[in-house]
Length: 239
Image (cartoon, rainbow, N blue to C red):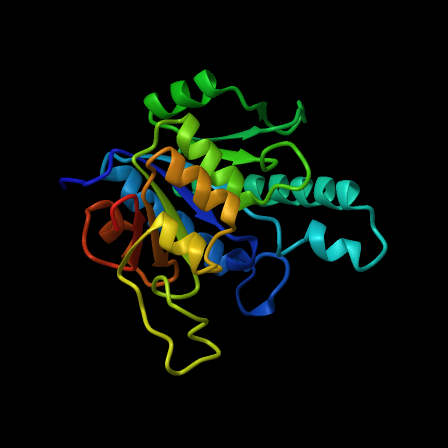
């Protein structure tokens, strides 16, 4: 099939892996995500993935428990590595060669992230899963996704969520929430929309990276997204 995007950066939340439990990893959801990624991989799309760690530990939340922010964020980055290894295992189970590259060195578990190495893996037809956030505290995995998207020259940042796009307010809390099919990065920042953090939006704005926000667990959505079908919401320079 013809695809609209040739290289994408897929951002998954840790919570998405947890499913209804809210913590840990739901094996059925993990398998479903792997099958969706297999579809776009078979369509010829090069795929990079950044995964959050909120299903295991959130650095910001740790501060309320008396954990130092830097230590908490480091624990959170390690949580993203655990999730990345689980996704790698699920992808290998469906027949995809996937490599985990981390922003900090864990030599017995994965490779160290180097831009040229990651691009070489993509060009060789491998899925690249980038763990460890940016490798620094005080930055979210959304910001890490925007950063890696720019570094790897991806065509789009695909932000997988639990809702079917961007709304002017939380549709799970407000019945009158309005879906915004298209908007600019500046709109997202000025309206303080919570789909991604401000730093991530700003990075995408400065590097002219479109963000496609779509519902993850609707079967076939990932394939529709790379085909350019009108699903979810698109945040771009021109809106």
